[in-house]
Image: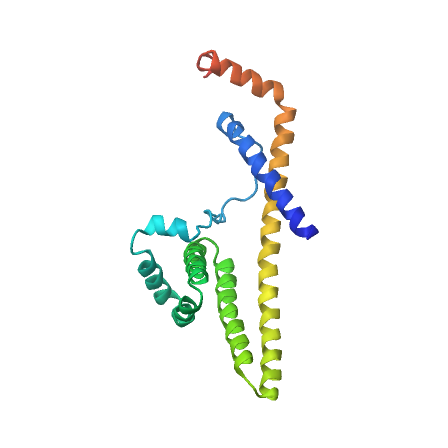
Length: 211
């Protein structure tokens, strides 16, 4: 819980500083930043089922199912069963799959390593659900014991992959925060110069001073 609170706090600080830094970036270049040759993952907001209904129109369900069938055909039958048992939960799963598949498409181009990690996570989630269902249906004690062991192994591998992804995100936040702190230090050191430059721009003297 403490680690999640720390990450949330760091994210809040990063977003606040990014917002405050937009004006500074428009006025002048900052100090040299890190290597930006690596593509940065875009992170659009997660859309819930109501968002998708508005975005995709009347055939929202058909559109999502066609995408799922093309990309993750193993999910079609579990979805069909869930729709019969719990329509609300079924719609939540549709939204999750749509968001996951959209993220996979972006990651494949922007961050192949994270793409492979997430792809493996999705497969392990399916494997874990399948093992859990088999365990619930089985009456054979020996089989149940083996399936329980297999399920624990599957969950352990899934947990390891998820923690690796979280660790990478934390490292990215820490790097971003370090760069923003560097920017703040640079601006504090050059406060008078920055203010004078902006003042001249606002009163129309900036152009006259250009070579």
